[in-house]
Length: 405
Ligand SMILES: Nc1ncnc2c1ncn2[C@@H]1O[C@H](COP(=O)(O)OP(=O)(O)OP(=O)(O)O)[C@@H](O)[C@H]1O
Ligand SMILES: [Mg+2]
Image 1 (tube, rainbow, N blue to C red):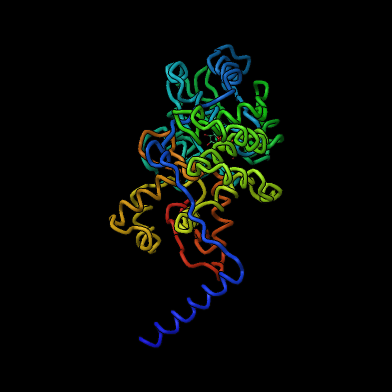
Image 2 (image 1 turned 120 degrees about the horizontal axis):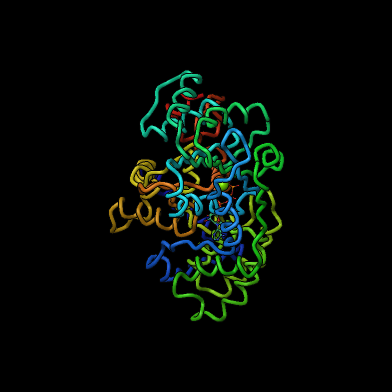
């Protein structure tokens, strides 16, 4: 034991010596008092009033030239531009909720599977789990449940470009009442062409001013930037780098919230990471500025499948079990250290509250999830039936996902 300790301390002395030779300095990052106080900023949706009004008019219209009583509104735009957010605004609107007898939200994703999507919709309509393995039976059940109801269905994040698949998926919906609507959100032009019946709503990038508005809201909270005039100029320049993407503005705002230092803001503005384009640079920068323990907690989230509903308590217990919180909990209990980590990831928008459901559940945006997968280097891996990578250290196997495919 003694010799082991001696060896470790010799190695540490060696590192300290080299640190001085290389001129490395230890930087203690100042953390703003703003981080904890009001870490959960109520998100504001900026600059989409016109789109919302236009789409709402379409949603509430009952004139319908089609025989099958079903019209489709398609929202098109690149990742992180705000399609889901706009669809959520419409979905949660009081007038919209009142107008329809039934409202259903289904997340589709790139892994399109008519059976899985139909089953999700049936479960949502009937409010109970289905153990059916027969697509035809599910379609009949869906048809019966929709009969004579005016419904609104949101198919969020549709990728499949095959016309036949689309027709197959929506066939049971023709039994709904006149005025029923489907909202589709997609990144693909081709999908928009296939699905839309109303004119396609193609979202524009936000202006620099609007990006600044989102960034400032997340960086300064409700008190605004009045007290920090020296940060405004740099902040506006950083907002320009967001390229009109609200996701980038929000995530950067979350990062800057924890830093009060002009120099640090400048360093972020001048960072050469903006040139990378494998993942949205704003997301990459946010990750790189996380303290080491949060990097681990964040990367670990890729152990779940994409768009998995995260449970705060469960995730904290998993972090505890993996030993991620050992070094930081100090006087605090491990649970409250985990709670702080969770809040910190929330305040940086790396985890988000799911607004479509009333329960306290959370999700990662799909682009943020892609980043978590990338930085985890498959050390946290969700088993999807493929070969398990050699680098995997934490593995999850979710029965419900595998049973469905
Ligand atoms: N108009 C807006 N104002 C403020 N924040 C916004 C706005 N639009 C989107 N956001 C924020 O940006 C993030 C990304 O938005 P959203 O998830 O709607 O993008 P998306 O277009 O659906 O992306 P994807 O194609 O990857 O699904 C969300 O966290 C959302 O809160
Ligand atoms: Mg989306």
